[in-house]
Image 1 (cartoon, rainbow, N blue to C red):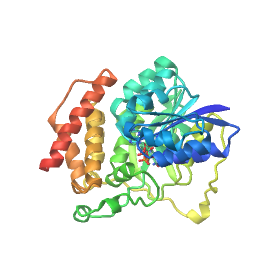
Image 2: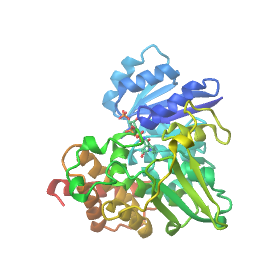
Image 3: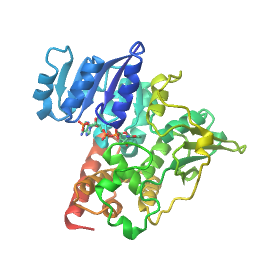
Length: 383
Ligand SMILES: NC(=O)c1ccc[n+]([C@@H]2O[C@H](COP(=O)([O-])OP(=O)(O)OC[C@H]3O[C@@H](n4cnc5c(N)ncnc54)[C@H](OP(=O)(O)O)[C@@H]3O)[C@@H](O)[C@H]2O)c1
């Protein structure tokens, strides 16, 4: 029996995690669940799972949460500090908050030294070196739930990185992979969140459409695995069946295949180093018939280039890239900017300041705040 906390329990990854946890009540007991402001979703999940603690990040939602869970035995709390505190105390913490809002909770969980399952990629992009250094100090186990990184984790012997020639990250290419730039200029938020293969939250869906998601994953891979940036490649694979590959010096290339359902990599992390059953049907290779691969187009999808440049530049650049992207995606979803302006705002923000390499989480958060301010200004005045 292991205790589990789910940060971001009401989101796409959080819901998939609870779906698995609830299937094996003899294996997992829920310690804490958190959300931003979805009180109804959080209260329902808390009651279903018998969670010890439910936390809303938005303190204004606390009275409603208290009322919803009165008499259930679940303790309640509200505010950002309460989310950070809730990240500590379980055997396994699923980090599934969206954005850099998850950074401090992730750090708290990592510093506490337990097992931390990372779906929330933005903290690794903005502060990956600090997160992995904290894990080395505390002895925390970091397990990647992002499907690509989970695939690499399954295919790679990290104790022998000298045997690895390349990591190949696969990308579906998103809903606009065949669209011209002229057509992409007219994309609506509704079109951008409709991913062809995966069902995900709004922010990551837009990131997939701009391919910034693959750029963030490139940086995430460089933080998680001992492989230099120039040996991490991206290839378009429309079917999203191969989730990534590891190419070895002897010519052996290992791939992980599976359905496009986050419950597969999440289950791998929940049960690791064992395996647990999931409700997914096995892949039918004959019905699948073929697997296609093509090179990504960095002209139509400049976010890929921006992310690789930020990774190579190092220092504060990935944190700036991430913060500007979060602001630009939110503005696009609000209908305040066009689809192509997302990458333009990120590029503009990156060009405007070069702070020193952040050595602490507070320094990362200061850079994040300044980059958000610059990006917000660009949203107002245009790029
Ligand atoms: N979805 C996927 O298939 C997938 C795959 C790989 C990686 N990821 C990564 O996993 C993370 C979560 O993605 P998602 O698609 O599950 O997102 P999502 O559906 O938008 O869910 C986000 C979760 O975070 C909570 N949240 C939002 N803002 C918050 C804040 N300021 N403070 C505290 N909690 C906050 C939300 O609460 P409310 O519901 O109350 O707003 C919700 O529980 C992202 O980093 C994403 O890149 C997702």
